[in-house]
Length: 319
Image: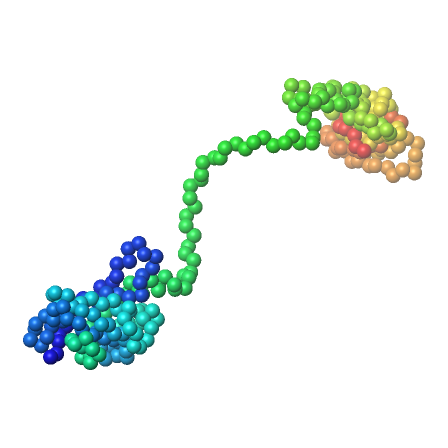
């Protein structure tokens, strides 16, 4: 008597809190005879074939089961948990479908199986494919996300150890009282002593000690010499007292502004030294020119190609 499978259910196993999917899926069916009568509480033999590509495709996996129907003719199998005839269930690549399941039945519980039909597996075992998909290759790195907001400012750290330098806020600075004043604190900052006094120059002596020296009252733009009738031959001008202490070994280099109401040429040199190269300056009428003049022991020599009024104004000095 030929039996029929009138109902076939294929469903994925609920994996709930399990760490991974089981390597099987549930299968449920109803066994009936040719007259449509349910085979109740009867031992049956079942073979499951899984074919690839089509209903007549190659059998990649086959297994057998011995089971018993219940009072309604239902029987339940775990496909992947039977006695293996062919293949390895865990090796099936569910992404390389389609796959079809063929059910073969022996209603006497033996192995004289008869095919009850072939059904395509549409989605049930693909929970297994989803599990295997987790073992795929690593994809390319996605784009960098936007920069997040700036976090809150952290707490102030502990005070570090004291440094090896002076604590200028509490220690007194030792300085030359003739040159500097103040103790280097906020209340009394260091300052150059007497720096507000006009026409002074900060210099050092041969021992490297700093001191102030004076121009003797000369300021920029003040008249050094105002001559009513310019000399037309070498004439000596003396500025020794005004530049006392400024010149090294008696030698200074002055910067003078030469003014003339008429056009003239003015010559400068050290006194009584014809071997030195003369410095020559052409002065336009009513204009001034800058002259660089060597001063020796407070003296320099000049002459003009024409007489008449001429004025020398002190601008500064250079070394």
